[in-house]
Structure formats: C-alpha cells, structure tokens
Image (cartoon, rainbow, N blue to C red; front, top):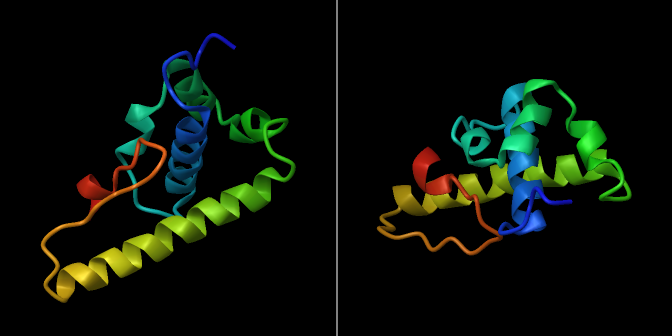
Length: 103
C-alpha cells in the first residue's frame, strides 16, 4: 500500500495496538505513537484504529486483547526480574518495542 515500504507490517500492527491501548488507558506507553508511520498516526489522531485493523486480521478485538495482555505480562515479569537484580533485558520482537523507555 505504499505506506509500509521499509517497515514490517507486523511491527506496525503491534505498535498501533499498543498506541491505541495507551490512549484507552490499558497500558502506559506514551512513546510508541511517535514511532508509527505518518499515515498510521493519522488513524490515531482521527480515532480510526478499528477501520485500520479490519481486513488485516479475522478478529481485531481479539488481537487488541492479546496485545494488551502480552504487553502487561511481559512488563510485569521484566520488572520482577529487575527488582530481583537483573541488569540486562534482551528484547526480541518485531520492532517498535518501547519497553526500554518505559521500564
């Protein structure tokens, strides 16, 4: 579609879910929205995330719930590890992960 030439659509989808979840108060991720490509940010501004998600996944609300749960669970265990003395965290993912900025 011309917008995502150099960026994985999976990375953008995950970041978009987190950005929307932040706007709704489900996760604390004020950074992720600034990483989204310009056209996706327009969807954020005009509150069209469901329209953007529809057609890319079978059940956008299920994907959204998975994204919120995954973010909260990984954050919880990462913070527990840090409290227990971990000094490093290796992040493996699709990209646009803001955990290093948030924790």
